[in-house]
Amino acid sequence: MAESVGETATSHRRGLHPHRLAVNRYLALLVGLVAAGLVPWTVFLALTLPKRYDVHDWTLLWTGFDVLLCLVLAEFARSAWMRRQVAVATAIVAGTLLVCDAWFDFVTSWGNPDHWVSIVTAVFGELPLAAFMFWIAYRVMTRAVAAFHALSGAEGMPPSIFHAPLMTGVVDPRGSAAASGDRTPIQTLPIAVPESSAVTIMSDLHSALESIGSSGDGSSSDKGDITKARQAVERALTEVQQACRFSGSAAT
Image 1 (cartoon, rainbow, N blue to C red):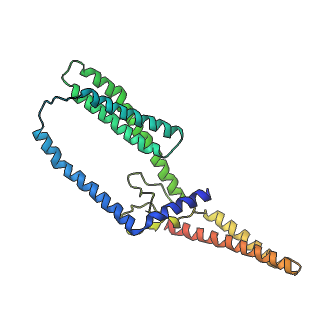
Image 2 (tube, helix red, strand yellow):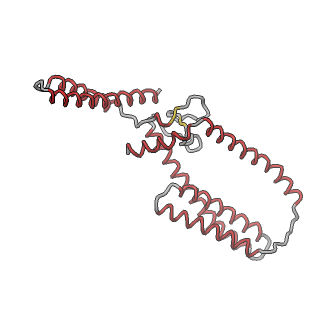
Image 3 (tube, one colour):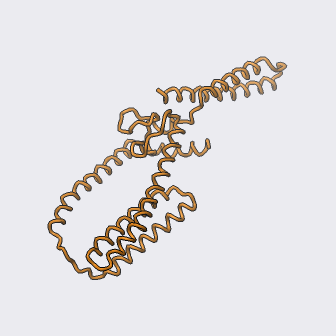
């Protein structure tokens, strides 16, 4: 576990560069502007599109969409079977495609004799499966946030996925929004040591230091072993003290 946490911290450390954070903000702003620009475009289409339109290749339209849906569902099945993190993304994409499938089936078949088939397949097939996909993604993300919250040493309940900061770049160990100015680099977040356990460990280490200082017959080899043991204990003691300071700062 220690190695995996260290590797994660190393990978996140690369994302803390101010230039990269600025690029992320600009990309978010760009997407927001695109979303805002789609509002007048949608109004324009609603006012100008014809009520009826002949599609030149109706078969290609729906078979292409269904092929894409099959590929996404297959990738979700593979990643879920292998327990890979990409299952979250494929679940969201699959759920979105299923909702789109139900919507277009319903709208394009409305007024035709077989429109009830689209309603039945949407209510009992596509929409429940889409809800299941979204639920899977929500469950995995919630557990990931809870695990990261525990590893960061923060107290209290973990934030919801709608309020939790991105688990790349920076994180507030108290679980507050990343928009606040108080940010802590992720590489400075070790696994917190419970206070009671830390006190016990520190007491044992102090006792070991005292016993090391009073043992030995005075020979040079014995003194060398004692020096190495003392250094090892002092390093361990320093790490525990740092973990205790982190736990105290995370709780405030």
